[in-house]
View 1 (cartoon, helix red, strand yellow):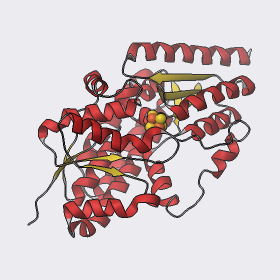
View 2 (view 1 turned 60 degrees about the vertical axis):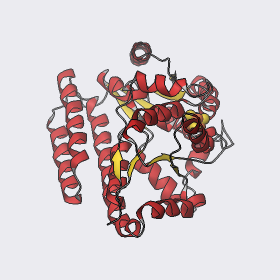
View 3 (view 1 turned 30 degrees about the vertical axis):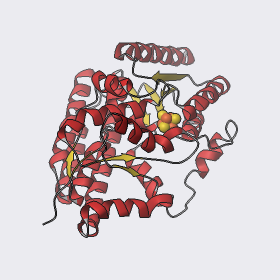
Length: 368
Ligand code: SF4
């Protein structure tokens, strides 16, 4: 029997839960890094250049916290395009080498360009088991991704309608859902859990028919999805009674990147049209989406937009200056929060509360 290799990967919000399932079902033993804390950031920041992107620093911190468990390889995501994401793999490999870790770092590149290299990596480790296990691994992973996003959408929609006590119960239900989902490895069990969770959410009786405030959450994918970096911003905003419309869900991102791009379907067309009066070029990362969704938020009557960006992230810095213009011209308040390893949770929370006050005052004035 061929050996089971031990592998690790960086954390990225709830996506780590489904990705862990994928690698486990393929035939690896997965060691997840501990949840991201200030220590992770300090560790990553110590060995990366000051100007490196925040996600790179966090990823490195994740590896350094996991390497004492001697994994055989590291999996990470890679990209192409004008931003620095495409260089991540190489930079991380070099930093780890300089620290004395000569460990294979396998980069998940977009399949449109690098499908064969990735398959080659998997078969080197798993042999024929890769092809045998792939369909089942893909099926259950997809089920987990969609289950997480479905429950998250339901939680975000319901939270703003509840009183404070029920809101707390709701977020506890979400936590319990994720804990149970982590241990499930069959499609039927996952579907039953989603149904049960959705029923539990609906049992919490609303105190209002409509949310008092609606905010669109935009920005760079990593800082939007990782609560350890954004100080649980989505939950904190929801606890302030705001309906949060997150614009990035991992299952949708996978669908776009793996399937639509592979089939060369232009899924960004509508986004380009929406952003066109303000942005006409691809700027990398989620810059186009940030601009397009801000315009959409103004058109659809949202009360405000919150943009999350790592400090120095080129696509989001470009988008930030553009959405300030959208904000002025379309009269929609925008709060841009730049995050780095020195950011503090209290500072972010204070800014969020001030922003929500501003939106409430604007509503009141409009009603007079
Ligand atoms: S999107 Fe921003 S943070 Fe992410 S790699 Fe590109 S420049 Fe860095």
